[in-house]
Length: 246
Image 1 (cartoon, one colour):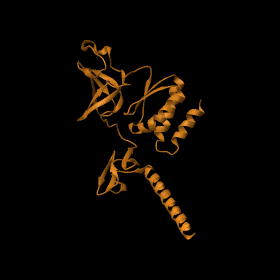
Image 2 (cartoon, one colour):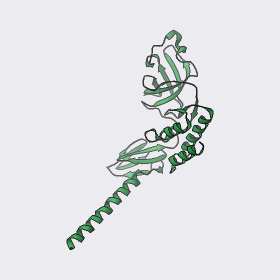
Image 3 (cartoon, helix red, strand yellow):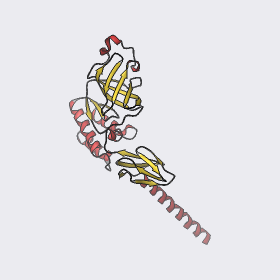
Image 4 (cartoon, helix red, strand yellow):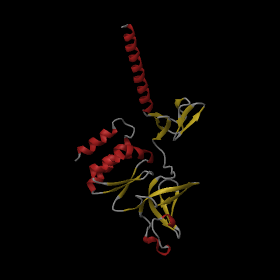
């Protein structure tokens, strides 16, 4: 009987340990506001990710923003700042000049971006280059190279090309992941509830194409996400806003 009681007590202790372990794990997944130089977490188990660095076993913030820990990786989600182009980013660009070998494209920020002819999905006649793309045209493009402030663009991927019959809205580029949501959950919810086609560029430009009311509703929903990107219950708030105006 005594042996049985000891076993029950041991099981309870182990159960409590597991609960504490899970609780600690959840705490580490919570996002907290940090400033540059602040220690986010200590220990050799953690790896520095975006906008963080490691010094003597401590992972420190390099940017002002929300610190997030997933598994062992620590990263910062910036709350402000300009777009920083990276290879494989998908961006929305506006043609601002035409040369003999391609197009100069405005992708936002202090960067010169260029789309060469050989990165188009079909043959383009050099003598009639404006037929494919003219000044002011809007495209969904991919970055395939970044070097010394120059950005090289491509249209050779699925889903890229000219955007027509719509308009651009602009948000802080660092809020784009929140607008998209986990596996596209947030942006798909907006699309489904407004009937608007939405293309999101990682440079903070978003293309809306739909009827006037749908576009207005989608823009308001995106504005809520941008302004309250680190608030708890954001998904539910956006869902209520979209559902409440059906």
